[in-house]
Length: 326
Image 1 (tube, rainbow, N blue to C red):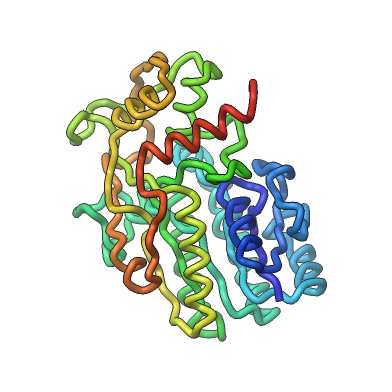
Image 2 (tube, rainbow, N blue to C red):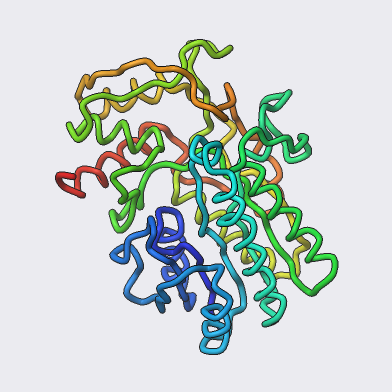
């Protein structure tokens, strides 16, 4: 029996493959390497280069492997890009997810764990955000993920499939052992960009909007260490294997930090006072997104190990330093 990790050459997917292998699982990875790096796929994993929405490739994988669970990380994740290219996002995040769900049903893979996002909430009325909040995404990225959540819900009612949809808040950091991290030079994540600025690989860091209704005028986000996130997925898999019913849960710490607070932490950890420039707001950015993580703590008994912004920044910076010059 094997676990299929889609997008397993990417940032979160590669950490997931490592975590599963550390736990003694057999792992198959599928990734088209459009943004992922082949070097991030662990040697012990069986690797298939191709698209997670390719029906012929999926038939081959299911023929060659006995897939018990699918952990679906493949997809596009940049909010402003989704505003500029909505059809591309609906294709990559929704249409291809439908193909993967159909393959799970056809080949009787009983469990599915989906990489969703806090962007499904749009601009929430209350903070912190509970899973019961209305789904009103303001970007095609958020909408594409919400559509996949709905497909999973409807499919689980009609077929013997159970799922967990995990709504990520802001994922950051790197493997504490230094085995994986954010490898792409064009990442849009704040802590990644701040690491590059601290190491002189960017001549400045841009702050998009300083007039939000937040304490310092910049966006507030709930940052979660990537290792805590993938362990939440492993707990979700354990839960489903134990007969648990389908669940949708937030993945965050319940504590928000502003853009300027994150920049200040990076400057302190790195010892570098890199330049910061202010720019206009970006399309699709809510002022604040902070999770209520009560459900995942209760149902999965999930207890984060790296719940500390300084540690997250340290791990991200150490990984970035190891990448060498861009």
